[in-house]
Amino acid sequence: MPEPSATLSATDPLPWAAILGAGPAGLMAAETLARAGCRAVVFDRMPSVARKFLVAGRGGLNLTHSEELPAFLRRYGLAAPSLRPSIEAFPPAALVEWCEALGQKVFTGSSGRVFPCAMKASPLLRAWLARLNALGVEIRARHDWRGFAADGALRFATPTGEVLQRPTAVVLALGGASWPKLGADGSWARYLPEVEVHPFRPANCGFRIAWSALFRERFAGAPLKRIVLHFEGRVVPGEAIVTRDGIEGGAVYALSAALRDAIDRQGEALPRLDLRPDLNLEEVSRRLAQPRRGQSLSGFLRKTLGLPPVSIGLLQEALHGGASQAELPGLVKALPLRLEAPQGLERAISSAGGLALAELDQGFMLKRRPGWFAAGEMLDWEAPTGGYLLQACFATGRSAGLAAAAWLRRTDQGGASLPRG
Ligand SMILES: Cc1cc2nc3c(=O)[nH]c(=O)nc-3n(C[C@H](O)[C@H](O)[C@H](O)COP(=O)(O)OP(=O)(O)OC[C@H]3O[C@@H](n4cnc5c(N)ncnc54)[C@H](O)[C@@H]3O)c2cc1C
Image (cartoon, rainbow, N blue to C red; front, top):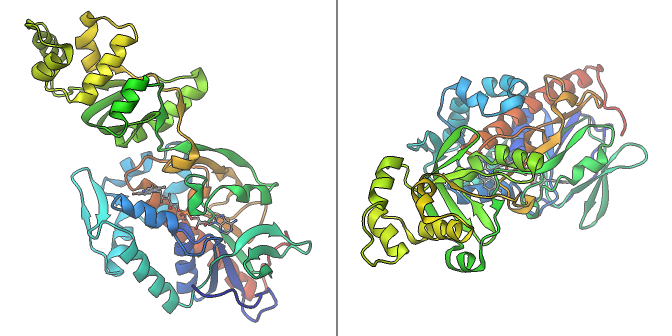
């Protein structure tokens, strides 16, 4: 990683853009600026770039999704109108092309999710950094943005002391607030007091359940395969994992925004778990009406319904909680889970909240800070897992980069200048 170098300033011969944050959004903004012939310098507080992107690669790096664009855009809920122009301009097919041009072929899984064939982020990131280097993008690691000096210069804490920078344009791509140890912790909000920032909340997260000590000891880490989760009329087939203090996994993440909001409203959420979605209630009732012939309850449930130990454990939790054995068929098909709280931001895959979209114009420029642009997860949108997160980060990074490049061109022609912080 290059070492910190001399301070850049608006008096440098060429206008230049500072990109704060070297995740997918910031690096895409930098690539876009550099391709437009602009000087782009990326600053990140961590010793190396794109740490969250690399961690996303551990799960195979679900880059985007192959569904049709109207359905794709609906995944962003209320934020869809703000994100639509960016995603239409850089849709999933363009992201796939971009990835393949970096030497990483992709494949589409049976769920429609798109992954690089390498199923990890490191080869893609390596090729991308080489391209950025060839385009002249400069990357300054270990530069922690700490707000403004009295004259409005950007202040960075670096291992060799404070560094001040006076760019012509700024692209903020500082990320949300999940997995803070990877670099993004939402602390940027304190440096922009004039801008509306909605509180960060966990998204695509697990939830806390007060398991009995016995259940927790036996089943923490156990997968619940081929289950279906029901909540507020939504039906999500998939998998989940029992954790020491609750439940997480794909089916839970898909419902996590609705579950989190229900907990906010009423203190708890009660999704229902179908443990045998392939059997209807009549069939489950018929099988459970068979004589037990001295078998233990767990043996009987295993034999008649083929349930794994963790599912039997869940039914036993319900029985210990006061349900009767006569209710077992209904419990197999719709076992209530009492979710008490979302797991914290430290373990959430993404965050909701962030810089209010109403603060931005169509080019992702801050209305209250001309020449400042913002992109990626630091903006207030959320989406389920499935590639929607990275797609929006890349697409908004590109939009912000294009708009910043246009701003720099106007500056170069004596039109625009960056107001002081
Ligand atoms: C475990 C996990 C798995 C995931 N899997 C997927 C997946 O498969 N598909 C998908 O679409 N999404 C996935 N995501 C989400 C995805 O990785 C993020 O949405 C994406 O990385 C956000 O990109 P970003 O550029 O906006 O922010 P980030 O990637 O968070 O980058 C922000 C950068 O800003 C830097 N920064 C923050 N504050 C400062 C400061 N004050 N000064 C300097 N630098 C600063 C940080 O160090 C960081 O490098 C996953 C996330 C996690 C945690």
